[in-house]
Length: 197
Image (cartoon, rainbow, N blue to C red; front, side):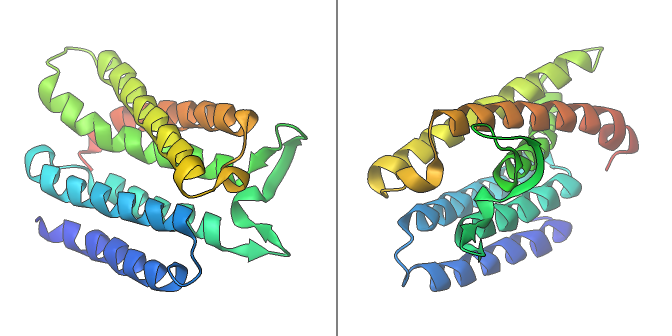
């Protein structure tokens, strides 16, 4: 493992272990499941980093997302789960834009597009960055779809229907995933890749 990768990896695993110690006794199976999946994801990142040399900036963004995501499901303010709090009331019910959940989805897929850019760059021999940007976006939203399948699994197996939300929530998750992926792919190609960060 690269030296600069150790701190974010240790940070994430220490956070996940601490979180599991806190939520296992509470029986929050939805977020126990998410914590386990995230643990495997971070392991996958560390293994594949040898091949792709991900941006440490992107790894840190993803590590911060882990905290934002998991706190979103376990912290409550005034009886309202953090994920359900409207940060800026841009559009009311049934959309409730901009909720913490939507912000976290945007942020997550911003980070994921950055991470995916590097493996794509390694294998795509193109003279323009536009195909890299497009495929980073498509790959990120593909992972977003997988995330929604995992959420559906939590509805089925962890009785998380009330927490995960309905059709509007899923559709808005996908929209905000796309927004984050677009911003992330453009940002990585125009800023990080140019500066080799």
